[in-house]
Length: 377
Image (tube, rainbow, N blue to C red; front, side, top):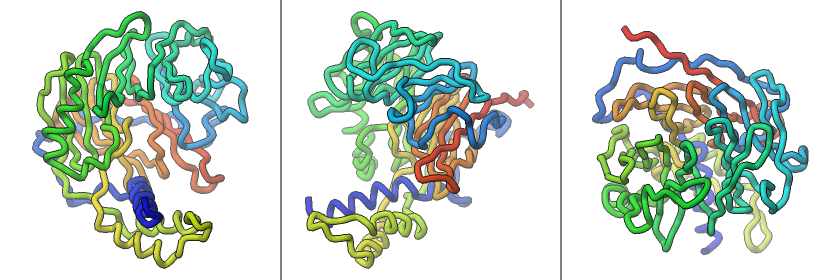
């Protein structure tokens, strides 16, 4: 790939991270809009500096059904790879040694509270390990290659992976043999990405993996550019799609300028810095590109009431679009700048990490909300 093409691809990735994803003129899609009273009220519990909390906005976090926060501290600052804190910042538990042996961790990437345990996927060791909340390893599942776990239900984990050039979703037992939900042979992702998905919106080919979320009996796959959400039952049967009927999204001038500013200091293969004029010109050209409303594998999640949340990023804040089944309930502004897709939704709790504009680059502010249900009218 030529330096020019590499730079263009880098610009597109940067623009996806800082594009503007909403405007007052946009309307909901074919789904019937439910009364706004169906939306929960978000009660802030934590918003700001948080003792003993995550240090960077891109660290993985998980919230428990009681509102406790689990995360992986930076390796250079803590010999224990996992930490659990309560809503005051008090440390409830710290465990997990660095290593490749049973129960040890190299690069913990995905965390899930399930029942009375914490499940952790280790990117380097290619395994999902279950820990008691006191830190005892209770079992693990080894994978042959890189997978992306996106949900844990009871003793099973839902993962998305690549197999023989195809996307595959499976529900696998954490202990003992896998319980087949979707097999390689009838991969639902193969159906989505070759038929209703790519044919309807070629721009969605930019999305390496789909956004994913599941309950014990439902699976949702999301395409961020076309804003389509594809529904499947527990047997993998396709139930149709829904979403929001929004016009194509393009980067704003400010987003393009931010991308150009980020690339100006880069050096090419010859060791020379990128020409600021050329970078700015490419950023200007990028304004005509279509960018997704949501782009991360973990952009979707279900709350305790069974509502689907879709998290996206506007130019300087984070929003959540909330659906009840296929009905669009409304959009909630979460006020989270520099969101790096580190968030967790569990029961009545929503946690996310935001950038701290006035602090050192990469530092994090933790936001924790309790979802309060409104009485029916």
